[in-house]
Amino acid sequence: VGQGVAVSGISRASDRILGGRLIASTGQHAQSAAAEETLRTAEAWFNETGATGIAQAYSKFFDSLSSLTADPGDLARRGGVRDAARQFTEVMARTAQGLSQSIEGVDTALSDSVGTINTALREIAQLNKAIGRTGAQTGPGDLLDRRDQLVHSLSELVGATVDFQEDGQATVFIGEHA
Image (cartoon, rainbow, N blue to C red; front, side, top):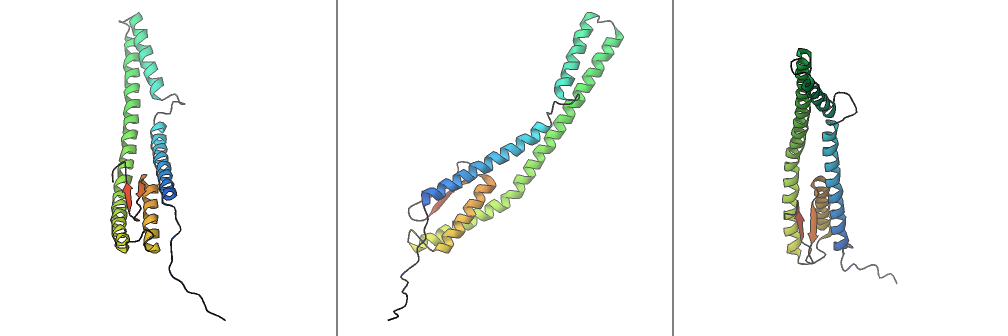
């Protein structure tokens, strides 16, 4: 009566293929979200709903050139070409400046992320070494969980993917490079 409980070991219940697919889909989502945000920012600079967009300024410039061909000596038409050209260059300059600022914002965000990414990659490498020393596929659950959490975070941040090996090791890929 009352023999108690004997624990012979703790094993981790996980599916490495499913885990890899989860990381891959999270990475694809992160890449798509980053592309959408970047393109949305760029698209805002090409918004053609108003009367001051590139297409309107371009059209006015070439309309003024067409009008000038009817009477090249007309000073008013020449002035119209000059004004339309000035407006077109101002719109292009404003758009170029806005796009440059958008690019600088993306570059700053990427630079800020590099430290976080490198720290996570170093920690993953250390965890992989510790997991490899255990010699068991299931390894110490807390190390595996922490490593998987870091890989998932990298996937959300930069679209990283992972290949889980049979021995419990994980190879992390960022942009198809390990």
